Image (cartoon, rainbow, N blue to C red; front, side, top):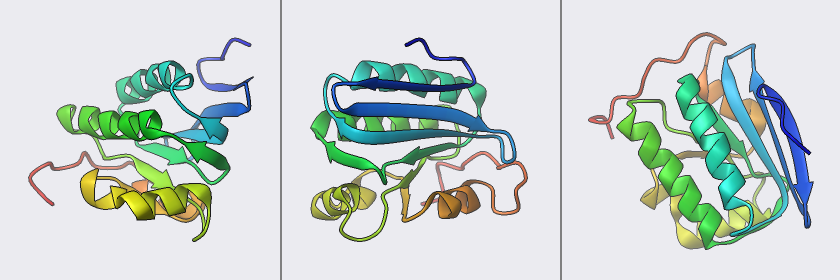
Length: 145
């Protein structure tokens, strides 16, 4: 199924990708549901390019992801690196409540320490991080830890 440039859903082999641009806070939201591995990464790369070209903050929602392999973690690292190269706000990742597949993986791998991303439990928290007052988000400053 082709994706509309502003909103879309695609499902294949147990993996569902949904993305949309939240106009209220001018934010790209990419939701991963089900199992994601090497087969999902090419499509994730396309979404990454679209989001970074827009200069809007990026929220990756992993609350419904049941499996993420190292290829997806590598994609998150590349997304963070590309945002830094473009002097954009670092992506915010919604990992869900303690015990979710993403939260367990991020905890075991200590990802928040190795990739400069913000991890939160809910999409509402993510939107508050990227645009606290519902307004525009200032560019990130790579010199600030």
